[in-house]
Image 1 (cartoon, rainbow, N blue to C red):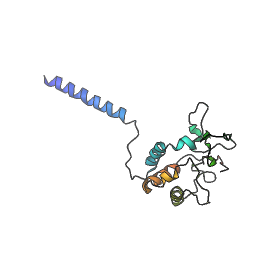
Image 2 (cartoon, helix red, strand yellow):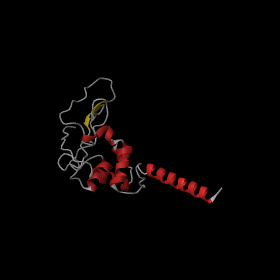
Image 3 (spheres, rainbow, N blue to C red):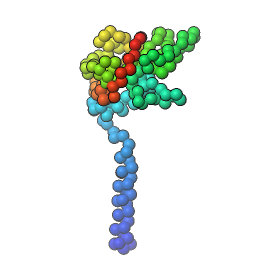
Image 4 (cartoon, rainbow, N blue to C red):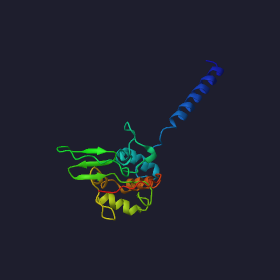
Length: 174
């Protein structure tokens, strides 16, 4: 093989490698465990399925990301009581054997969300299942499992939630 052919093959291989690297750079960067950054928190919120309960749904069931993590919509319909049913959910409102619970606004809004919470208040709430006002976290909020999560991961979640666009949605009730 001549020198010119080797140069062409090496050049083509280099361009292909660069193109492959450019295409793969669009995926989310890996964030190490123990990292307390908001980027790590975003990953943990996604893995934990926080949007499943705390983000209202559009018709068809897709999450309404314009209201991400804003909780049960103020004035929204509540699930009915149905004898013999373990769990009924309507857009962040849950009715089960424990009664009724509403997904809270966990955006950075300082009045209706958790934007005024300190990092320590956030950690204590998830470790004890009770916030500083005495509100007890109700099912299906998995606070017992979250109580076992390392501090660094909970801090990362807190740091991410403090970057979420604030929502004035006021969740009232249980």
